[in-house]
Length: 539
Image (cartoon, rainbow, N blue to C red; front, side, top):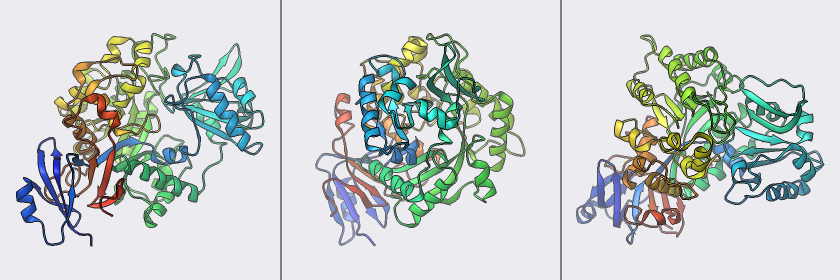
């Protein structure tokens, strides 16, 4: 049993309702007292360890409500093409060539995170260019959104894709003048992924642990793997169970099964996996279905056309098919976590959810979610609120992709995107998240975006939707717990709550917003025990 812990010497953020305290006492993994420093100190039992904040701040540990944890861990070993480091086509090709040099002939070379809008050529790489970079290897690189990518000729040959291969339902194989460019969008990517080598169990457990440890360094204690099965099928379920059994799962995980027909939800059901199986450390709670793509990639489905190209995006499924999937998973008892970004996709999903709501299987209390939910109308918000359907947005999208939204959709639509303040004020409980590895998992850059609505190019989009830091932390803690039916035990630092706590390097409630990206987590506690300790404070 660990010693009691008294945290004092700085501010303690109890939560949006509770405000600030001077100290918090942790006993047996829970908050035993919180309030004035002198009062709390008097309650500390003999042998209590004193942690001096020295002017820093302690907050409830962060909750990453929408990310892809296993793919993030696996991606740590893949070619990094993210725009923070890669802004030219030549650098994309140089990194692919370097990886191919290290690979055996015929071994797949996989890259992640390029943004064609951020490249100097302002377009996707082509198959021919990847051929020249890696003439001996199949190559597939995924755009930052995860909804499209480019393959070289060797990869397409392995996948059996030729110039006359038809587009699959909900997907696009790009051609120009009848020739393949190498670009695959949405469900067409499955044609390639079905032929890529799948990671083994040991590699997956390593990736799970590595990703969890990385998040712990950032102040997270809870997270979600948003589409379990997308990398290695049903074997991912067992990999998580092994990680949990072997003490290699330091975060609390809320698990969301891949539910498209190519996902694992049907297999999991046949194997006996049921809604809410597990415990607070590893719980299987939801199923995910894709309704559309991404606004940055021109595949999110809208009523009004894009300014670029004039299209309206891609629906992953026709109405009758996606509505049948929503009804099936709802009636099985799963939480619905449905990807929909454009207003037309959100409408398609809402119509399906409303049709699935019945006396026999009511929506009340189910906390179904629309993931991203970036571009929606007032009436859609009203209908979501009426049925308790939660938005799970990624404010960081405004920072990383906001200027692309303006280019693709225009300023008026972009300023209304991801309306955090409106959602919060209307009582939607929006759970801030990152969609990592689509965007950076850095929570302090996400907090900066929520507080400023500023893009990485300095554009301010929809300033009226900015949050206070207290509101932003609330969205990153309590709201995430609420989406996972856990707000009774985590998300605030009130008496009786689990002592999941992050000690930050600076008081984020007192510093200038411009300094937020420089903040770091110094200490991350799960039930009062350190899962990350930058300075050895509890050693």
